[in-house]
Image (cartoon, rainbow, N blue to C red):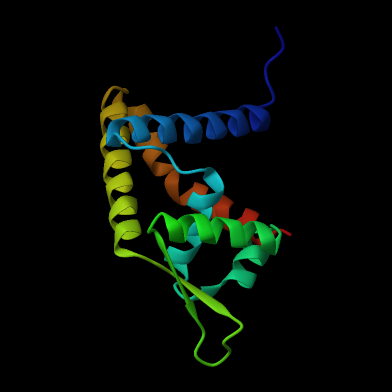
Length: 148
């Protein structure tokens, strides 16, 4: 049997790891999951409080009306605050609510616990190699973010 392309394998593993961790953390936290698009928006607003809806659409590569729908859903859920820019009332500025910050911190704590438990089942060299890869994965993220 021919060996699998290592880049294809890497992409498949990263994707499955993301999906599996996300599902297991949702179960562990005992709450409904948010759609991926809402999660992306929340992460962007956390990184850049006060970002405009127009800038969110540009950064996520999605249509402004899609962002409007996501913002409305997250605002209705109490996870996002939408305030008018004092200098330009046509612009909405987005910030996380305390409920969103709490939910995101809770998610991160559950994710850390899940990964800690899973990593503990691996042999030390494998665990060390995975943890040592984190800075290189950060560099890969930066390279991907820099591409159009």
